[in-house]
Image 1: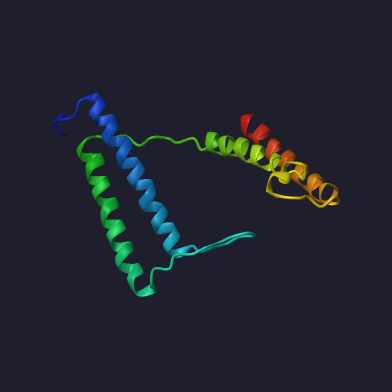
Image 2: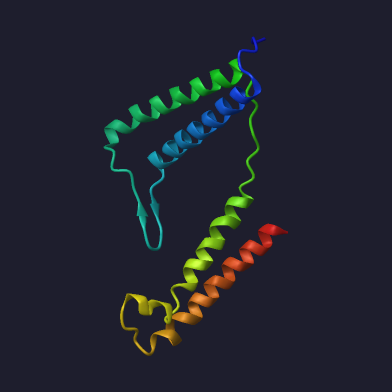
Length: 139
């Protein structure tokens, strides 16, 4: 049993900070072994292979320290509902996509007269798909 050394606000602040650190550290572990080859980008870590085990070990040690602190101060895990994270960025992306219509691209220079018929329908379809994802995520 642990002594109650933290008041509720301190406990909450510690838990939030440690969750953020843990999430970042787990992201590092993921990125060390998972390079991503996407359509318009490639995500890599340029850290030399011989240094990756050392970083992995340090991250795992840091995660163990977080576990010690969580147990020491009785910090409960939080259920994080990523549904909101799914909806929020999609709203911003839909707005960004609207700005990619041919008419809006005039801000970057002259627009080819045929661009709207080629680009806009695909942009509109993509916006509709993002709307559908958001709609389903709200249900």
